Length: 422
Image 1 (cartoon, rainbow, N blue to C red):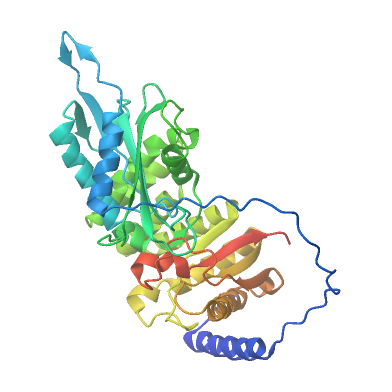
Image 2: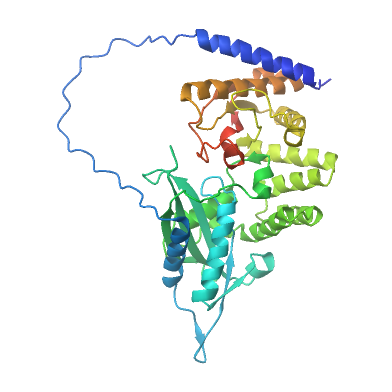
C-alpha cells in the first residue's frame, strides 16, 4: 500500500538530508589518482586566435524599431491589383524568449511597438489577431525571439545584452521572406514572464517551440519555414487564444481552448498540457488537475526530460513558506513518483540554482535540493530508491541567467527529472 508523506516526515527528511550531506561534503577531500604527468613539450608556434566580435547594443526601443524597420523594408513589395496595392494580412505569433520559449512583459511590449510601426509606416500590411481562423487564410506570420546573451552573443555566462531576432514567414509560399536583427541594452528591460508562463509548473524542450525558434534564428530570406513550426501552427494559434483567455482570468474559456488544441494535429505540446492543469486548478477541479498533471509528467517521461519549478527558500532545501505557491507540491511529487513507477522509468534528479553566490556553494545546494526531492519520491513509492540518482549542476545550466532570484529567473532554480538507463 502506497504511503503518503506528511508534513512532519517531510521536515524530518529535509533536516536529515541537509545535515548528512553538509557534513559529508564538508569532510570530503578530493584525491587525485592520476599518474604523474609527462614532462611538458614545447608546443609549435601558432598564430593567436582572432578576437571574438563584441556585441554592439543600443537602447531597447531603438533596437526593436531598427530590427523591425529592417524586416519590413526588406520584405518583397506587396502585389497590386488594377494599379492599387493589395493589402497583405499579417499576424504576429507572440514573440518569445529564445531559450525558454516564455512570453514576458518585454516581448509583449515589443509586439505593441511593432504593431504601431506597421500601422504608421507599412499600411499595406493588415495586422490581424493570431487566431486559428486567421491562420487558415495562409497569411504572412511574424515570429520573433528576444534572448539574453553575453558579449560574444552566446546564451551562457553573464547576460549583458538581448538579441532581437525577427522573421516574416509567408504561409502561402512556405518560405521566409525577410529577416531583421539587432541587440538591445538590458537597461529598462522587464523580462518578468506573463501570467500563464509565470504560473506554469513545468518546462521541457518542446518541438513546437523549437520549430518557432529555428524559424526565426536558424533561417535566412528564401529558406523554407521550419517544418516543426509549420506543422504545428494551427494548434499554436489555438494555444495562443487559450493563453490570452487565461491571462484575462477567463479560465473556463481557456480550458476549453487548451483541450481543443491538445486534440488538434500537432497539439501534443507541453503548453497545452500545462494549460489544462493550470485552468483545472484555478477552477477548483482537483481531480481533473491531478489527472492533468499526470499527463504533464507522462509527456516529460516520453521526451526524456521534465523540469519542475519547485521554489525553495534562498540557500535552503525548504520550500517557500507560501501555501499559495507550494500548496500543489505534494500533488506534483505524488504524480511524478507514481507515473515514473508506472512507466518503469529510472530517473536522474538534477538540482539547479541561479548564479547568485559562489559556485561551489551553488553546486552543494543544488545537490542537497535534488537529494531532498529524491527522498520525497522514494517515500511515496519505495521501489524508486533503486531507480533514482541525484546530482547538482549549480548554475552551470541557467536558462535565464539574470541572477535576480525572483519570478524572472525561476526556471534557473528548477529541479529536473531526466530519464536514464536502468
